[in-house]
Image 1: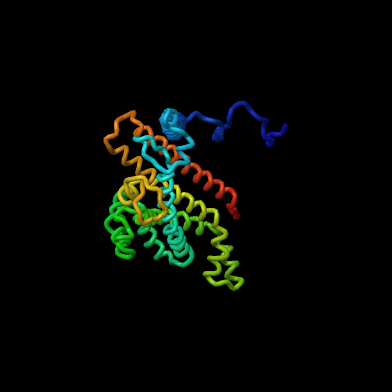
Image 2 (image 1 turned 120 degrees about the vertical axis):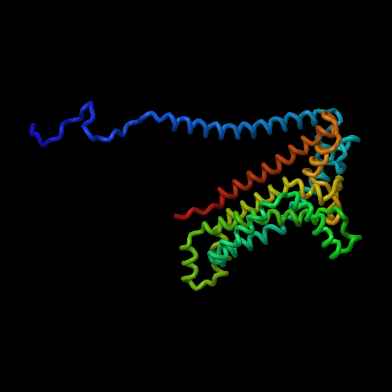
Length: 316
């Protein structure tokens, strides 16, 4: 055999050859274990919360005076005297959330369209931090804003005899202002993710900027925009401080937004902060209401995930 022909595979490595084999890296293993524990801890915490909620809610529904049919069908909620109809709390929660979305979706989508399609990079760089500041305002501040500014404004516009001091309209309007940055930010991300080639194609066909935004960019980003709206609804349903301060502190089945009505989160906050003794029926009822809230927000999250998967456009 000639000396120029490389030798066959050998058991050892030649001098200077790089070892690409697996090497033990203890630090990498420790980091991986810590990250796994972080993920497992968050999942276990969620599971623990759900189990406690289910356990306490089942204890409430197992009481002889509580009937599941009455819980969903009767219109009076006062557990201390044996009235267990959750409809007043549910209707107030849905009403404030609906008012919030009427405010937040058009304003948030409009802001997202402006930032994505019209604003220069310099203007966008200044406006986005301002929107993010709104998202960082504590909800208790929003609550007092609703009580001391929005309610007097509504009473000035519609009359003090029409608008009560505590009402769901002012709470819903301020909740919409609170959710606006969330919807604007998520929608702007969805709009920005649309490839420039689609815009350039529309411009090449003679479309104006508005026509491009309305007929090309918005449909392409529809799944992200719908998901932003559903996340906003979930956020509104679970909001506590604004409705606790501005909407009212008594269950009231009404469709008039200018009347006081207590939401599910408002009821939980009122009972939890009161003098109700542990183990009383009022105390147990907050877990049943909490379970209803959990189911509603879970449904919205599942719908959001389905919409994103069903209508997502994938571009290369």
